[in-house]
Image: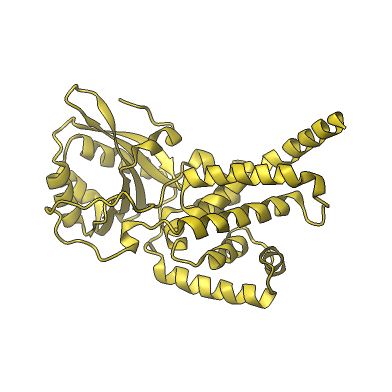
Length: 325
């Protein structure tokens, strides 16, 4: 009996482990938190391992794991609520000189590293689809959907499940799934804050542009920054409620609230949600640059259109960013 149990455990691990990364991406889309997603994938695998002996194979193992993960996520959303961005909670501020207000009690949306959510490198189409379905603006828009509509939209439009498969998972009718999908698509369109065509990370001109962007911060070149922003650029920075629209407002914010000297800031490249990102480090009194904020940048042909600057420095290790530079 003991040997049979060991063999069963080995079978489960061998068969289930290949789905871990895509389940993590699924949980992240559902929750908007990479920390929560990692915890719930662990919970999914624990529940699946405990129930593996009763798995009858009526569906594929992948479908079975998604069913468990989805139910775990629905419970978590019911208990923890949604994770917004500042732009989803109110109107933008037009007073960049006024002290910004932090709300650490709000469970803010979190970015996710590309290394965690990456798709199959051998399939370019899969890579593009994975980027589009993990863009920060898309994840933020999902947070506006009721939990069941979120499930339906992710399973139908992102994972390409059939309506009947989703209906079976949610224990509802195909008609109800199709109706929920229509409502979810309409609400997503209404709440999606970014409609510009983003430049793909592989675009040859992107690297030079991002080097100019990083250098402008490091040189405290405010005039240089304003040339890199689109006129209607959006800047938001959880856990602060205030967010800003317009290049002039954003550079005034940086100049007044951050007030960097040349060499005070350093930018280390990263990648988040299929978009370019930077770990921004600020020099302390001891001359050491330490984590300050993680910027996720939306870059279009017209320049930087959106910057999400996260002040949660616990995110830095997830992105492989150093403790100091």
